[in-house]
Image (cartoon, rainbow, N blue to C red):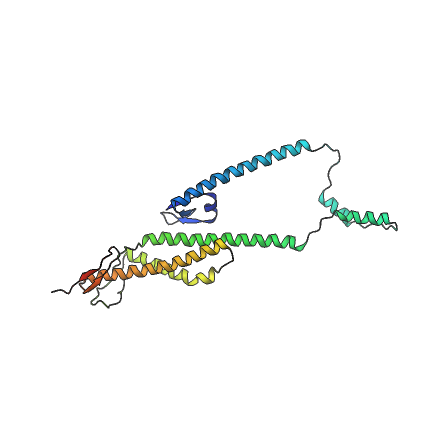
Length: 258
């Protein structure tokens, strides 16, 4: 995995650094970061080309503009003329002239104002949702590193039989990280559907669904950590049975003490 700080990742994603602080960027695969770097170079080259084109257009328009001693009318002057009362005239020419005076007046419709605002709201909603999903993804990644699958939890007491349920966890930093991660997962998952309902955007909803699967997977993974740790405690207590621990692919047989 690698940290990408391209302009796109910085604007919509965050990651958790070694000090536990949020930083702009995204944790992605190395191959994906190479793609982002290439796209960033192409984007910068395209923007530079567009800037050169705009600058050249401004120069050409300045050279091609004919000189005129008459100043252009301001919009407010045009609107004032449009609001002025029309002189009464019985001639058709006068009526035609009056109609022509209103022909150039710009008309603003409600939809012309509402639709851009709706698009702006949608874009801000999508951007915020992607940022929220990025934060959750970063938290999952950061917290899961503190509780790997090989974590061995400690218990206050040892089991006495193979059917004993996992005992109460003892105090300690490893157990504390496990409990905090589990509590965060359960709380986030409980409020996930109500807080982050789908918004109809393919990318944002895709990230939402991916995080939902990841939250459930991490809870299942923590269940395995607890189960394997308890099995290890059974082995230490010489509880008879077959056990397969996280770091082994073969079953371990524990026989009763003689």
